[in-house]
Length: 325
Image (cartoon, rainbow, N blue to C red; front, side, top):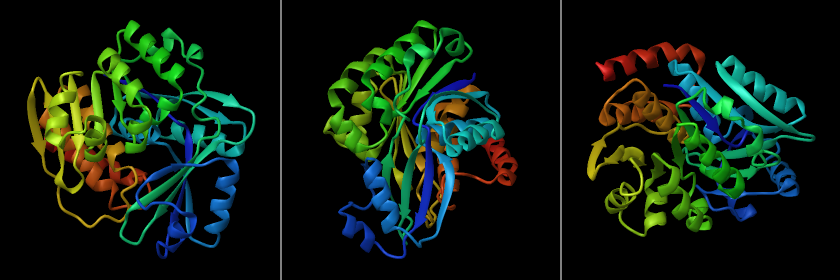
């Protein structure tokens, strides 16, 4: 199988905090994702001036899609960027990773996500979307979609209801399976009614973390997984250091993870999704697929940022083969 991703094309600005005082000064709750506008983005970066920072191509779905390509899965990515040099570097980064970019462009600057990394590894994100969510669904042709078996949709794009509905409709008409990540508990609360409509209508694989699943259903995580599995074929709930659970046909499968001290939790869920979808693509069991996911998630939290160096992928693929054997 192969997969195409639909997500926010955002540049990751990774900043290491010396303490959490700046979060309090800005009125930002630690560990959350906050949407900001252009002026707030400029003010935030002014407050962080002087701190160590790194620029990387990011966005949740970009992380997942690049990881899938590095695992050997044919992957594409649909998004919208600006006409600036950052947008072009984003395109080149996807090409370098072996991902086929299907980019639309808007005149001006590209979107960015500022990820502030606390001393304990927890990350707090402030996102300036810019043109990223304004993807035109009518520009995504059936010919493009028909080249893939899966479409992986980023939950942050729920802000563009027309895009989500139209693309999922077109994908199902082209015979694709649809995977959706719930993205963030604030997104779940804001778009609860929309999720109630699209999940049972279009979604085959649903990804959530523990907080998102509980927020959406109002139930404990195990009960939440069972309820959601009545709406979709496969529900995957990540549990942080406790691993993950997968629910299918009313049965729950759990996997553990290797304990470690996280350096930066950015991208853990994104890499888990990549591992899980890769497992499905090669016919692995749900338990094997989730194990690949937890292995990748455990790997990325030992690094700063959501990018695994090229030289490490051969070792990762050896571990994947061990899991599959």
